Length: 136
Image (cartoon, rainbow, N blue to C red):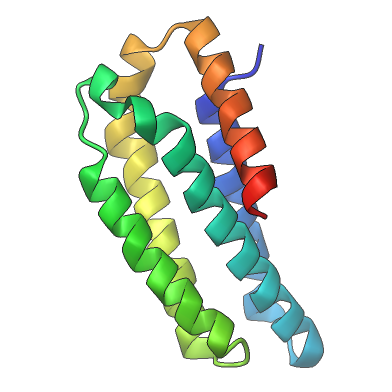
């Protein structure tokens, strides 16, 4: 059975890895990585909204601030998509995403782990993966 938090963590780590490559890249490779980062972040946000955030109240959490952060990240990503060669715009979008993902992992996930059954986790993981595929 898959674990939703492990699935989401892998996605967070993928964005962090892509960002490391982006920072080291130049020219057309940098633009390609910027476009990939934009697609990944948009799909990730949509997938979280459609899966785990839908159940946040069950964990004693309020997803409103997370959804607000996603809206902010999505605006930054839209700006980045319009300027995929603008390093400052891309960096702001990705660093905001990373700060948000680190906050989820350190502050919210311990509360979720305490209340999430293995079967619920597997269901949410499937929902996340399917939502990400349809958003990409």
